[in-house]
Image (cartoon, rainbow, N blue to C red; front, top):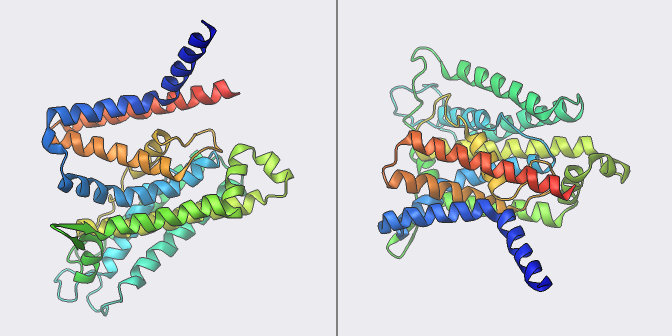
Amino acid sequence: MNHQASKKSNVTKWLFDNVIYVFLVLLVIGIIVASPDFLSVTNLINILSQSSSRIIIALGMAGILITAGTDLSAGRMVGLAAVISASLLQASDYAYRMYPHLPQLPLFVPILLAMVITGIIGALNGIIVAKLNVPPFIATLGMMITVYGLNSMYFDRPPYGAQPIGGLNQAFTTFAQRGIPIGNYEIPYLIFYAIIFTIFIWILWNKTQFGKNMYAIGGNPEAAKVSGVNVTKYLILIYTLAGVLYGFSGTLEAGRVGSATNNTGNMYELDAIAACVVGGVSLSGGIGTVPGVITGVLIFQIINYGLAFLGVSPYIQYIVKGAIIVIAVAFDMRKHAKKK
């Protein structure tokens, strides 16, 4: 009896710890049953492609969440990077160029510039949080509004006003839209970019002092400080790295869509936070893995793509997404409370 009770207890505990995954798997199964055509190589490639830039954003966000922080400015940084890169990579023969006399720049120059700018903004977030002791929610909320204002001023340029920045040069669109032919399919470059950043972040988190200190800060910042960890320095580095990742993702979004506006990336930070929490990153800090983050992003993208594939109203999609976020956070907080 004791053995049976223990076994039942273990099953109950497993279901409690993984209820969000069970719910999401059932939802995906429901989508597949409703439309078996959903299971196709083309759809899989589309899901992975659409997930790629979101994965890069989520990896930046996850590092901050592991330190028990948050970053509400992520989406606006994505938008800023998209606008900057698009404005500097328009085709030379496009009639509505933002800079009509600007020579055709090498592809990597505007991309690196966008990443540097968002990296600096990320560093400012880190300084405000670590040095001024402003709560991350408030610090990044203020930065979110500030970045949107700056981006809108840059975007709303004379003489054309606030019109989407299009006419991107071929090198830029090829960078974000094309892929490598494999058999009858083309695997988008976006997927390979996401894989490269995933490997880089996994090594950074698991094989370097940076990663060890990041988890230590998230677990107990005071204990980390006593152990000799420069908490201020590492928090600034973590927020800076996140900013750089948002910047690269923003350039990918501009190239993938073929244009950019000051609203590119809007609300991406909430999707990233939700994907991280679904993937096992604790909002209480100190817990999170790269595979978990990737899983969270893919689950969300499969659900988004699947519901759209079935023709479900976008309004219902928002309701489903909101419910998933609330359930995931509620169970995360309960797990953390039980451990305490």
